[in-house]
Amino acid sequence: MFKVASSISIEQYLSKMTLRLHEATSKGITVNRVPAGNINFLVNFSLAGCDVIVEIGADGLHALTMQCLTILRELAVENKETSTEGLLRGPARKIGTFSDRSIQSLVQELPPQSLIAFLWYMKDAELLSLFLKNCGSWSAKTLMDDLTVFYPGLDPDKAPSYIVQKGRAALEEVVRVITDLQVSGVIPESL
Image (cartoon, rainbow, N blue to C red; front, side, top):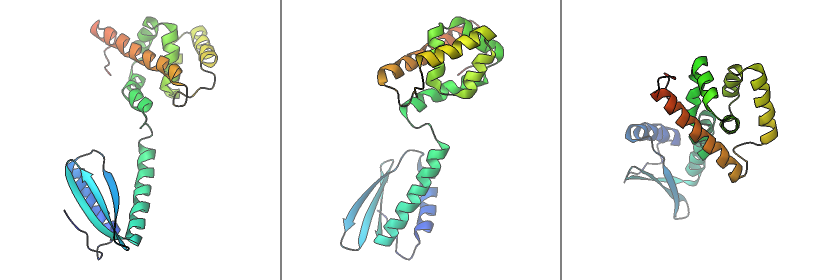
């Protein structure tokens, strides 16, 4: 247990605490607020089995809250993909670095419905552009038409789960096909 005297500013404490926490682990922090009398509060930071309890006044608690909100906003901008769907998409974004030849091989092996569902689910304009570039002009037009017909204005992060499940299944199929193509030596890149 460790107390921060009121003579240390919240900024100084956060700076020291941030260094300690980054050294300890990159996992999350749980914060519990427990009233301690009429004026001060005990804030409990738990991390990797270690607890730190800080006693601060109401003004300090407000300052700490504002600082945490600022940090959370910055993290949200840096890590836009924190949803389950975003986490599933993350590794597959590497497909965007594949060579044209590898993308063409992938397009040839994937069933059209899987490719359409995958591109919708990925929600990535650059990846879509890469696939369109590597299809013939007629195939690219058909692909775009099918995307607008099957998923008209649907956002994969807000769509009903039974539709999102099609996108997840398509992502799994794309990964399986890539693995098969890698094993056979057709695609040199890896996810």
